[in-house]
Every structure is written in C-alpha cells, then in structure tokens.
Length: 125
Figure 1 (tube, rainbow, N blue to C red):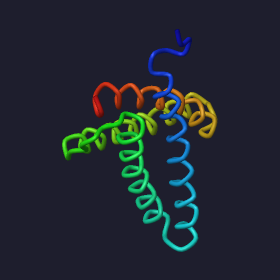
Figure 2: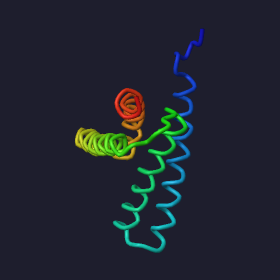
Figure 3: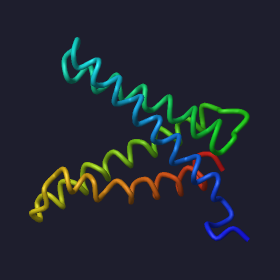
Figure 4: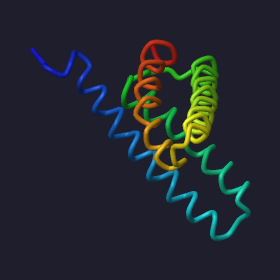
C-alpha cells in the first residue's frame, strides 16, 4: 500500500511539471521585461503559461489523449478563477497586515492543491 495515496505519482508529476512550467514562464517573463513594456511581457508570459500548463498537465499528468476545445475552455476558466483567488487572497492578507510577498507565499500551496483537485475532477476527468 502506498502511504501517499493512490494518485501519488500523478501528484508528484503535477508538482514537478508545475515547477518546470513556473521556471519557463518566469524566465520568459524576465527576458521579455528586458525588451518589452511590462504589460506586454506579463500578458505574453501568462499566455505561454496557459498553453504550456494545458499541454503538460493534460498530456503528461492526466494523460488525456484528445484535448478538445471544451477541455481547453474549462482549463481557461479554472486559470481565471485561480487568478482571482490569488489576487483576492493576497489582497485580504495584505489588508490584515501581512507582507504581500509572504501572503503570496502562503497562498500558493492552497492554490496548487485546489488546481490539482479541479484539474483531476473537472478539467481533465
């Protein structure tokens, strides 16, 4: 019996590929910030994050053979909800007196867990 649960390897893959996605997205952002305005750089890096995440999680973690527009729209909706939750949570914690960088650090684990749960049960089921 696996002490980490029946989906241990899926969860591990999700975290590893999430880290890869994070690194690629942020390296791209850092490069783009050198040559483009902030708004263009951030939008471009988020678009890369969206498509790369959809591919990595759909193909490698949840092993969806046929990615449809319907699945992509669900993934896009989830990304938007997570963005709103991220912003709102950081803002609330900041308003309560917590440093915004620490607040962001505290919120990330919750969002990762929520993202995995929603992707496995709603987006890529």
